[in-house]
Image (tube, rainbow, N blue to C red; front, side, top):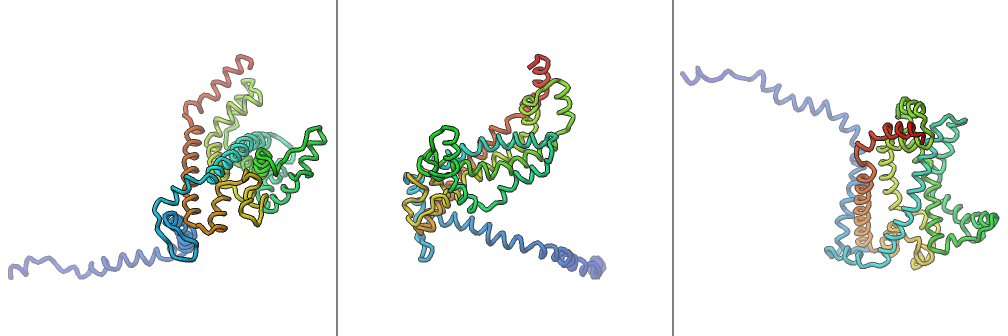
Length: 333
């Protein structure tokens, strides 16, 4: 009887509430999860699954139909001893350097000019962005006729007394033609990104620079560039990612039914992604192509880190812009 007297009171009124609370929360949160689930389902099917499957595939030999054969790291070993792959890496980096450096510089200058008080600035912004929404295939076909031996580019050079260039036959001409197409397509896009960053810079900095007697060049390199460093870093990284994945320009410009002529004469237009596509979908070596894709990913990651280290620099350099500007203004420079 004593045991019964000391027993805790029955909690019959609170127990149903403890069991129903999680259900209530689940029912309350279920509709939002269901609403956003299509995005995660599609991302899992078409985003995450291909990534993990390509990594798994890079350790197998597979023609896309038959059974897979595990080969370990042999795909990477064969790839590192493939002379065409190394040639495609050199071509890709040459084209990337020839296109990215002038493209970002032109974009920065264009953004600086658009940020000034120019007439019809809205129309100029639309005009610079039009190449970015143009079909890459159509654009490459048009540029193919422009860079032909008797095309518009050589006609303009001959008009000013310069001999024609083998845009589609020589090594330098092929890389220059592809680089010019990349610049034409992306310079306006990056200019608008820089323009958005320029509009976020306080006007007081520009006014202070003008009061100190700074010229437009000094304002550009000692006020705009330090303040735009995060935006420049973003543009460089995205341009690096895009530049190392050049495919359509080379594929359409030198398209041929013969796989041996891919990339143009001497395979000077052969890029990493074009070689990946050729091995995967022409030669049906999907494991080899997957290994190539992961090496390309590693290259992009390394260069993104290098660009970040070079461009981000230190905050001390950012803060030196205005003092150096004032010092230069006092010295009459």
